[in-house]
Length: 215
Image (cartoon, rainbow, N blue to C red):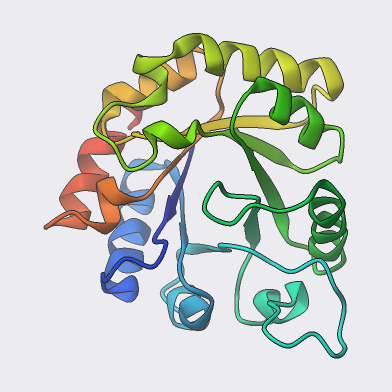
């Protein structure tokens, strides 16, 4: 089970969260990655934790003010990138181009979608993984695996129908070990979460509780 913690733009200490994630990953044997703001990629990567970008742009070097180049994210220490998060939606053609850019920079890719139909569409673009995240549950206290288990099952089926080599993750409301177990039971091989760790008073304790059933 892969645990990807998206720090979004929350006012947390990204290095402290990264150090906690590194230590919990080493102690538990669970794969944990942190996705900080672009400006914090290098500092987070220096902790030794697996580091992901929150986004990379669908372009190469050139006159693209405000873009986040996949190559520069990789140079800062990123090993993967999220794409098309519901808070940063992209056109299908741009998702395709960003996947190509990420592959060029040897970054792993996870493309988000709101529902199984979107998951099938983005899986056809050949990312390493897709993640189903109903936007109405993001940031809430009820996980998608509990609130709408069928959407996870259907997302897994939609991805497998297109390319059974694409991993399927689920997100939205994930915060407990029970949520991880439920996601795994539904066929997901990873989870995305954010506020459950980034906004926790004690991120280390939150991560330890999260992965305890898997350790």
